Length: 385
Image (cartoon, rainbow, N blue to C red):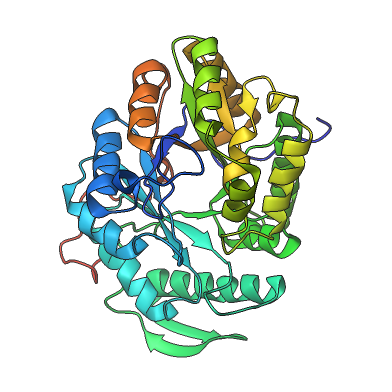
């Protein structure tokens, strides 16, 4: 590449390896079907999360959807005391909760987890609402700025297009004392890229060819430099790993064996973000794939025929998957969010075949967000040093 990619954790020789909690439905044996045993419920989703914790994953995405499944924040708060080591990556939809109240809720959960909380910023339309991309990202920018004032200052003093606030900030200080929980962000439109460059810590990408991922990283790196910042990079991608490549490809075919085109299209159009630029990039990638659905070695796009959003999987034997992940790490990707079908089974298989061969880290610890000891008084004691 002609220009270097500036990475926040450029000297980090490990990566944050995360799994996915299907609290918004989507767990299944066959894409296009939704068996009752896999429908989003507390028992299934919490079992997957606690399994990931026991197996050594460093973070887990708790997504958000209005149409199906459970409430993200209620789920995260209920599961938090049961976890031992894993971080929670809880998704928040900006505008859904009044920002000062959201700051307090995040800080409360951060203390319950003793700093093992990370936040996935979502800027999509709220149910029944239609806003321009520029307005949605401006609202998110204002929410983030208010959160940061809440966590780092004694007073919120903010005037924007959507919020006008002058409030004290006690007792909303988080457990993580060096700026609050890390903010993860995924978005492809110019206003979204600009928002992440200015305010967020980890830029999450959906799977594409390595060349296109490098282009996204280069663009974000340059945008962040304009704000005097650097960001880390993350990849959200599905996983199918088996002892042999033939077994992995056979499982991929099995997943698709009961899907018809009409059902696939209905599923893809169901989500709030079905017409976003990021989703269109996933469709473009599928169109470039070979007859078996592979757009480059071990990157299979067939899975995107039955879901909106992240639409590809890494498919192969343990050595192939490990080599592919290492290539991503060499590019500068520092965070991975994997998932598979069914989620618990694939979580266990990846932990058996690949996870022990990877050096894993917790990004909040790397960024020194977690203090060495808990503050003497809860919530209000989280002052910056």
